Length: 208
Image 1 (cartoon, rainbow, N blue to C red):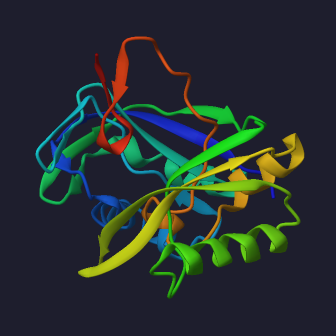
Image 2: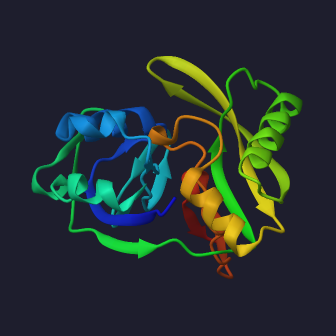
């Protein structure tokens, strides 16, 4: 599967830290056809800082991963603001980026049906990697809980190491587990660690 990323600058908010479901609902309100697209992944918004349970966007970013066929549906998104959990979010013109091969990948949260503990989760990872014919060493991260349609969904952060370039592109394009429309199962190469910067929740950072 050929996939690419669209990166939109965003401003507005703040929005809840746990906003994956609300964000996808807002996108589908604008473009109803997105609801049925299996070739679309929606990353949660990246912002400047987290305060309590809110993400302040500042000069934030929305990343959408999709097949080329979906791109025309997404180009109209900057025309009017999105309503994300009652907050107005304005998108700028997107930039297209090709996926990059990497020997390591990271997902903030991956979910599998009925995988409520580490053992069952790792079994789901193993099955998914086998289905993708991908050879990788999984490293379990922190347990996370998100709310989707009012229900609590359990998942884990996940790193994959020792991935070939071809396999890494396949994992990024197809993801692991479910709920890719709501920020789950989506992988990126790890961001470079900047000296003097400490990661915050939601992929944010602050100076040490």
